[in-house]
Image: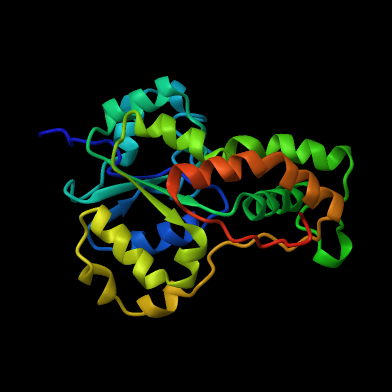
Length: 259
């Protein structure tokens, strides 16, 4: 039996906390796509294979087997692992070798808003999902520890990440989170065209319109102090300017108190 050209056919490399779960949920409904089974904790649900960070020691044949559709090998397999955005040049070169014709997607969110969402996610884990009214994120060592654990600067370095990836994948679909959230139907049309998927595979699906407006995964809205917001904004302003210059996207601030 002939081997598939790619291990993974559609790669979403992030950004983390930028509607990647929403996009994966919708694309998984398309009759021409396939999401691998959930092998948690080896994978993160059916969405994130984490081959180049968690599972590289398992070898490329393990990744090929994981990403091969069980019944119809012509289906396009999905690997939506936002941590891939931070991969080194050597790792991306290996990714290109394993997935030479893969369609790559990168969703960019305003860096401060993305960072706040990531900190809230890490706060949720650290506090065992405590109610919002019982948690206040203040500027202290635990906050700084979460900044480091969440790799805020690396995930916010959109321009640097894109430049590395574009050395190997020249046709990356870059989407603006705010635009995608404002008009998800138009955003999905761009995704489907980029991935060579017929639109009617989704538009004819029952409940597709409702799913477009659905929020898939949301961390509790733990409040961050003004000091935290200003610290994050100061950390990321260079990355914001570089990303805007690299992509032409103009990010609209979501937290005006951080100036």
